[in-house]
Image (cartoon, rainbow, N blue to C red; front, top):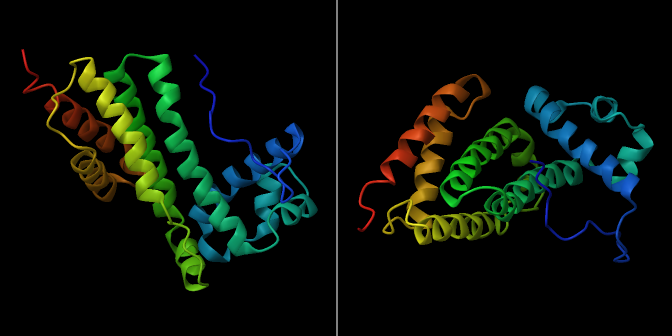
Length: 201
């Protein structure tokens, strides 16, 4: 089943929604930026990002006039994809399965964040906080998933979003690199298995 994002449409500075082709190009640029900054760090050439995205350099600079703007937007896009996935997953599958799928996406997000760490530090040093509201947005998405699974009586009810976030962050720190993904998935399965115990009769 194809999942669609439910977030607000990306708009221009005047508030008008972007054309579909412009929006697609923007998404391709942001996805390519995550990959390239993760591979090359802050010194990554923006022209390579444009090439990876299949767009011209002019298109990249029209959307993101500075390196810092591109880094921040790439990170915020990963965050939005993670948080927007919660309602989509709940609509597509049972709550417990939706929670497990979202846990995997959290590791995707954390891996991207880890790969872009150097670039993100440069943005912070420039006086911009790309992490503003990040934890709040993640906690809201996670709460909705936990509440749905609790209501379906498929996980225990005494695990807060704060505790779950700490557990997922621990997995990301311990096994957040791409080459450690198999181990991360095993750890996520262990966490989810633990949530089955203590479900009230």
